[in-house]
Image (tube, rainbow, N blue to C red; front, top):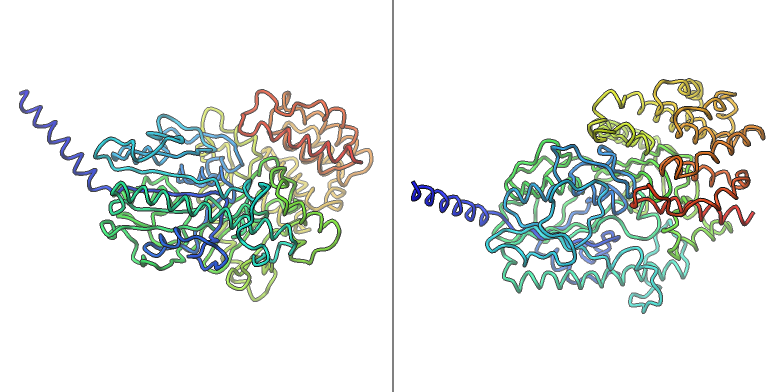
Length: 617
């Protein structure tokens, strides 16, 4: 009997080793805050010899997107293989959970025998359940794996991050006089300097890529390892990072498959070539599993573009924007081969809302100052104004996305098609971003946002229609929006109030006393939006009631972080009308206890920005 058991053990070990030998090693090299500003993408100003060499033996993707234009939601998309608007994780540094039966992709790879390392950043908007990585941190390396194990390894370089663009003093390498300034930025010496420094940082990042590829070569693993290189979203320059234009979503993606693994390539894979296949971060998890010969779980929302279980190419990729640090917004994008469609669900908010971290960059400061002085042209001024409900840009003829074709009769067919693709997508994934952020958590108690969205707790169709009606800005919609203020669902009341706010003085006056009644709504989020509407466009008596209401909600200790952030945004938008709240705001904690540390500091940023503005007036 013992001999039989021994034989079975030996056989099982032999089978496992054989299987491990059949699995490719996979190396991901990633960089932060840089778009496809590389030589291999045709950028003659860039100095990127190592990535150019990798592209010569691999293939570049020209229509690759990060799905989110900022780091944490983008990284959350990758780790889950799900669109964050479907998991409640779209907002910058929020924190939700996956359903119990869903795993983060390294867990699936580990089940197949992979040794998985992450060097070094995680920063997910989803809680990690169980053991995800074999090793995650600055010591993570394929060299630490057990002998004979296939590896999956990530190395993330931060040298190109937004913060490095503004680090001074800096020895300039790329000549600022030769940089291409996009049409939306002013051609100013400081802007040129920031762009040139951005390219300097990309060159530094390229050297790091070269060092890592040399390590692979030195270890004799080059012929056994599939290599991916990608950036985590568009450049760290303002109007790229944080914004779901193509400039904020488009990433460099280079994939190299050594000869041993060429059979795992897609039919259009051409060494040294390029592909305009629409791929995104949501596709990376299923692609990894497909490369490992594993059929991706059906709940994953992406599509494998390499490996044994490749899916058909998709016509569109999808982007999104939620809360960016301390500022709320809701935008959805559809990226096609030639056009990008953008749907703004909060068109009353400026593109360039004051995000404290973004305003540290010199370009942001100069750009806003020139706008305030009236020294910018139409394309350059656009970022500092409110948004239209829809945008459509021709990426071939207008790569800087400054000529909105949504109103063009010649593009009606394209607009309708991409609008429909957007509606089908948000319905397919069941987008929970139509809820106020706090309600995502409140309605999900005892469950997860993904699961909640598939129950009666989230009447998606009714809420989405209310949001669509509110943000479409049609004057005929005012009457039904007023009716929404009495709806049994708080999210529909929220969008009713939001729609009236979006319509300005005319919308608020049409509502009569109904918005005043909403100041006592049992939802704090409805109260805040009603107060902002009355505070901006109501009578003096209504303004006083609105400010008093906001003064009760801004306290994060008493009401929680989400109502506080929303209320502080409203106070900031009321400018001098909210000056009576100055003493209360001055006494507010900058980092209130009882709030998740991932977004705890955003209340403080709002306090500081608002105080700075009110104390000047």
